Length: 209
Length: 209
Image (tube, chains in turn orange, purple):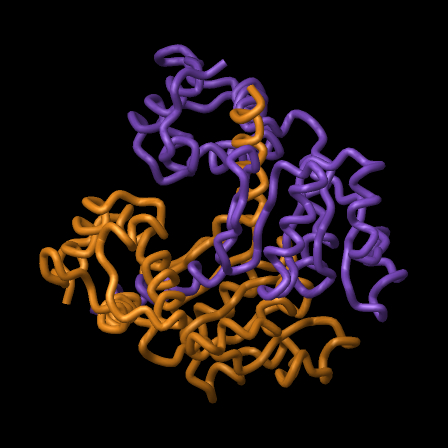
């Protein structure tokens, strides 16, 4: 569908998707590269270049069809399908992911949450049951799971990961502040929330200095 | 301290800081650009280039002093000082930030949490009191606050932001899925958690052909 897409462009894809969804929700049907650039704080030429990368769209002087472009980028991202998730760890991060409205609205559906704490096992977070992490392998044998959200304490993160991988999970959204040891076939995206604060600190310093 | 630092290098700074802290915790005193590159999945030449950007460090064939480099990058990031934070919104994200151990360990100290829900006001999250958002202006008049963590519902995010800005807050860590309208002097870092899932979806798609 799209040709070679550089890492930098890949990183911008979710941004395009988000802005186009907002425009669609606002009822905007058509947008120029100029107009989209103003929203996204990119130049019109950058926008045109990126969108060419995604597979060529729009016509000079006419602009882009918002719904079509949003759909096209959604397909490139692979978010035009449902992804089934499980969450490992019913702590604050696990709860925040489980209770988010926006993930299921984008097709990321949480099937179950696993934890080792007997006080949490058997309870529900929102409508999602918290199950004993000891039953994880059995659950994976009986359910198709696309993505595991790893939000367990640092100490157990590799052990839980090994169990996920042994039982066929091939994509991990990792909130543990550690580089997981993974076979090549497993895809991982690491979230380092703290980096946001560090970048903020850096920018504050630049601004004041 | 450092010369011109590009956006791409800035984005890598927190990563360097994290890996160097890990090395320091492991008791590693000295590391080559090769060794650091292997950890960070960058080439040795990329590492040398980046570190030159930060202000020149290490000697050919000798490598970097881990503690010194970590400290140096910490200073560039501005995390060698304490940052006082307040959290707006005692929901799941606000709770997760408030209850994190890693933020205070890095000098990001939360003074108070504000919410509009009478059931939450007056309670504590960890050791941090939840206060009425109506008292926010008064609190800001009497406390020095470096960073506001914005974790309120989308509908009220701009209104709360306006109150923060009017009362002198100049840095916002924004978890609301919206581009806040801000004066130039206010620094913002937006967290779009969902982008992580979208990138994961994209990578899974690439992997599976």
